[in-house]
Image (cartoon, rainbow, N blue to C red; front, side, top):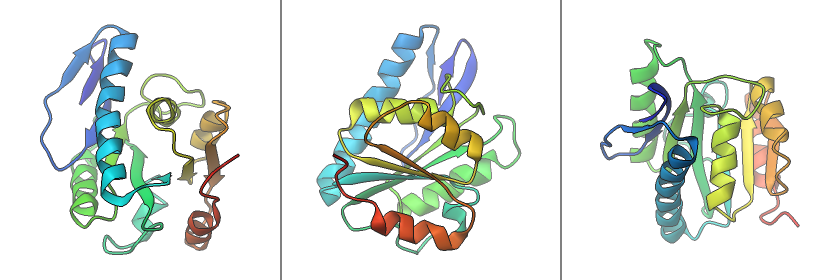
Length: 184
């Protein structure tokens, strides 16, 4: 878990326990998160020779599929980015669901954010997407059923970030299979 000014803002879920990281400096917080993301991305890229990154929202997107379903191509680095209230009773269930999907090798890692907003401020999905694109050269496809998350991510104006608003399950797999591997 990552804390900024004594507020939890992000939890990165892998199959390994992590100690909490506290920072009063935004630059230091971002550097530490980027360091961890770089390591996760490097390991995933080595495992499957990833050519692109596919980021799925959990609720209303990834949870429409069973843990054993294959999401993406064999060369996709698939991960989940989910907003949940930091005091939500469902937070522990979400962590366990992410861990189960990691164990099943459906996703490489999961990230829980605790701030919802229409701008890419600290602790939002857009902020995490900005950090991911800072440490990874891969094209990134972001699928979410929340228009506010999509709009905030689009405000980043990152050329290799493609955002898609998902309204039902039938849109998900075509989005994943039709996205070009390289965005020129």
